[in-house]
Image (cartoon, rainbow, N blue to C red; front, side, top):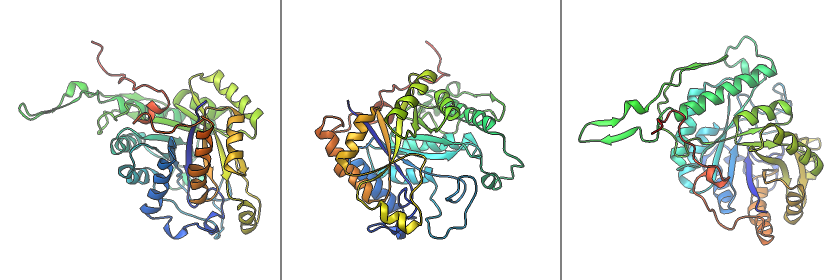
Length: 366
């Protein structure tokens, strides 16, 4: 069994006191070099991809509103721009930024992720994120937020618009014939004419079809409603089981919705014995939606293989420490057990998961 491993990057790490840990680099959090170093290290460890967190409000210890804490990291760089900045510095690892689909126009998302796919030569993905927080809505003058069911219907429409815009240029729409003066074949650019409950989008995109055709779409889910959203819209679903039995129950539920959806488990990982000190600094034990692991790389390898999923997205508790422990401790341990690659085998992100390059839905059948 060969595992897929991704890493979720956020700030100084997933512990709120990570910026105060030994070896942390809080003075570099808003520099391109900090993120480049992390992604280059992840690629050195042959990881499948990295994700970049993002939201439309400052980080908070609350789930539904801002807080007034001054002792935790606040502020982020734009995830899509961040991914694009590291794309030329890497050659194999996938780059998956997060964007809100509740307050971001799908046309803007479509061209941003398509541009990232060009910048990375076929290594782009996207994580659409639903926002139900009133403080985020207040940035955009939205008078009232829909209920949760409507938010997910809106998210589904947004993903559908993005996918259609990626297809709106056929693969051979660019002619680039200097002799005849024809750069594009207008017959191979298509209006998408999307009319839905939340969007009306004409198209076509202003960006040619991405190198992967359809960049990888991933989603995070904790319950049936987001599982259903992912089943209809995503290629990969991140889930948050608490133990092996919970993981198997969730996978069975998701398989009923979409047997082809790739399911990865999220884990917060501490591989250096520093969690207790960080809990003390933060004033409380870490609370997380995902299982929190603390131990050695060998013990983490035992857990990953015992849970039996095809892939995992690891959230390093402290950066860069726990990322380095993953790439230089966990990866060799899994390789020694024949459970992880020893080289990248495909240049594009879809191919890494065994997903083919889909044809444009608008391409003429010959």
